[in-house]
Image (cartoon, rainbow, N blue to C red; front, side, top):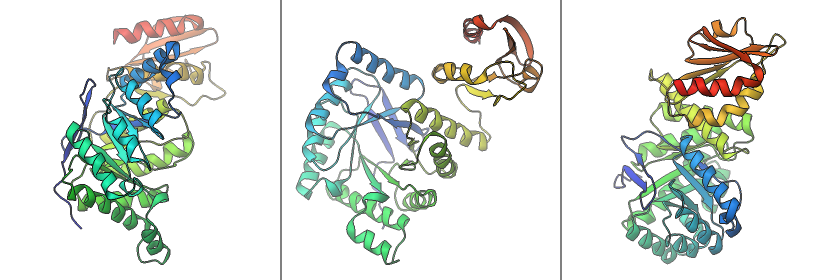
Length: 369
């Protein structure tokens, strides 16, 4: 089944927000999803200011889209109010009740994520498509291996089709509904927790449609395991030109999801002979020779590093003897021994200070880059 009528490029946001262009000719956009239920109290007073500040920091870190679960009408309204106060495009993730999608569309929500198969009867889906179409809001069809239609699960169980083919067929069914209503402002995702299924399904879908694809491994696990599994799948797909937006799904913070996604995208660029963008952080793992606590310094600075717009390499090394030499290519580095810290540029020591002054001195040198 081939579907070639859908938009190859999608504009997300722009109604009082930043606009993100996804699809043919544009770089891969990084996404993450908020970890907690959003309630009205989150928007008030100090909590509200902290929430907005964190979202804006995610934007500076390179996150293009931020998705929130909207399980009920109240959540949709709270999310809508939040969308009115931030510049990052916000996405409403909606299941089961089409009225939630209609309510979200009363606000400057940048994108809706639904699975038409669980929204209810076709007339309800058409109501959502009609309102989204009138407002120019794109919709992502999200198909997961854990929520496939019953008949496709039966075909998998009997060996008639595999998981990848089931995912693609489920996506094609939903796209057919969109096409029948002449709604072409769409994206699609087909996700599984198995790496091989995720890769195969996205390759198949890429061959059958021009619809922009959101890629990721669902339920990937905690920080280390989840990052490795996403890296294996996403590096493969993005290197082949499969995928227009990406989320690294982790049982961890939204910041770490963004960092992991950026690193995978940069690794793809390096593999293609291109220069990575933003700050590249190299740091030694620390051992018994270490005279500088690389772990704590890197942890303190990690978010700051990823908000920098400079394209530079930063080194955090544990040994004052070997550190500058091992990281001589770094634009700025820090190491130390005892109560002294050493700052260096491209292997040359530029300053020795007390460890207690290391953060302030490092910040000063970073500003000079």
